[in-house]
Every structure is written in structure tokens, then in C-alpha cells.
Image 1 (tube, helix red, strand yellow):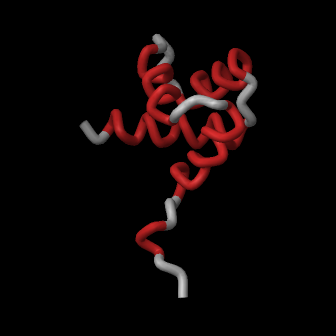
Image 2 (cartoon, rainbow, N blue to C red):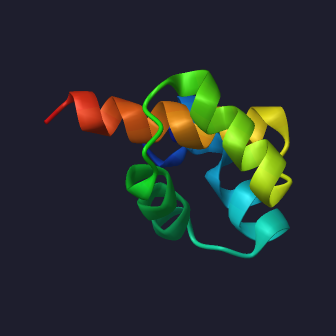
Image 3 (cartoon, rainbow, N blue to C red):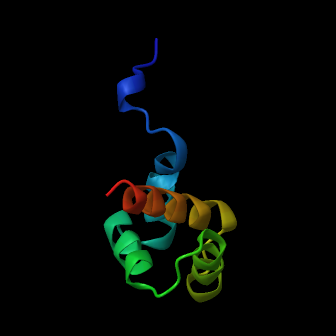
Length: 73
């Protein structure tokens, strides 16, 4: 039986592979996203893809998670 409490769900499930592939901690990516003047989801995704070479899924996961935190405040 799998322990579901230790398995990341949704966008966070991408975080280990993002850190491994791009060599930056998730906190650093989130700080970068928060520092941008862009606010729309796809603008941020496209920026990450163009400026940092992230794949669409990885960029989308980072943006979705970061924006969800922002709206929760």
C-alpha cells in the first residue's frame, strides 16, 4: 500500500524533476516568478520557457503553484 501523505500531488509532483533537470531549488524559481512584472499565467509560462528553457509542463507547474499561493494570501 502506498503512503499518500508523502506523495506530492498536482503541480508539486513535478518539483523533484524540475530541481534535478534545471539545477535550481523550487524556492528560487518561485522567487523569480514573483519578481516578474508579468501576472498572467501563460505570460509567466512562456517567459520561463523562452528565458530559461523550461519545458511546458515544468513551467506550467511552477507558475500554477506560485499563483495559487499568491491568491491564497
